[in-house]
Amino acid sequence: MPFRQPRSSCRGPRPPAGSRSIDAILAGARARLCRLDPEAAHLAHRLGAVLVDIRPAAQRGATGAVPGALIVERNVLEWRFDPRSGSRLPIADRYDLPVIVFCQEGYTSSLAAAALQDLGLYRATDVVGGFVAWRLAGLPAFGPARMLA
Image (cartoon, rainbow, N blue to C red):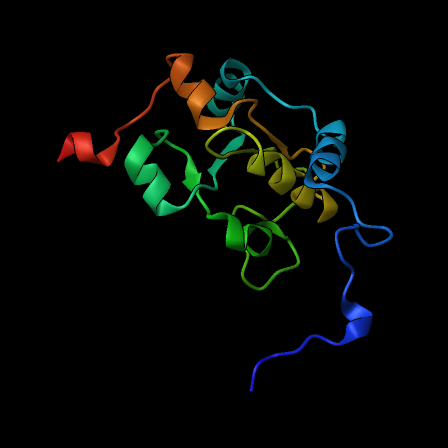
């Protein structure tokens, strides 16, 4: 028997009331962050900030990685950094923890850093341009893995 959606939930081409585009959500997230360029993120990490790579393993393997970055994939980030979570990392025991998130190009990391701020980690931010910008700035990086094989 084929699935039939109830008529009342069919919306057509118009967005539902109260919905926002991803561009609007991203702009709202970034408005809350004090985003760092790669050089500033590197310096902050050297001074003790936690640098977090949220990219999936396949992407890290294909493009490379940052030495010293903590790898916490996006799908578990909030559980690993919420000081109230039973699944938190040992370092995530306070709300003033400086966390700098990066992804491949700096989009998903903005949403992720805003989510960490929603948990109370008020110093969370991200890297403008992500790993691509980090690499272009000539900052320390490994890989990609296929080059090392």
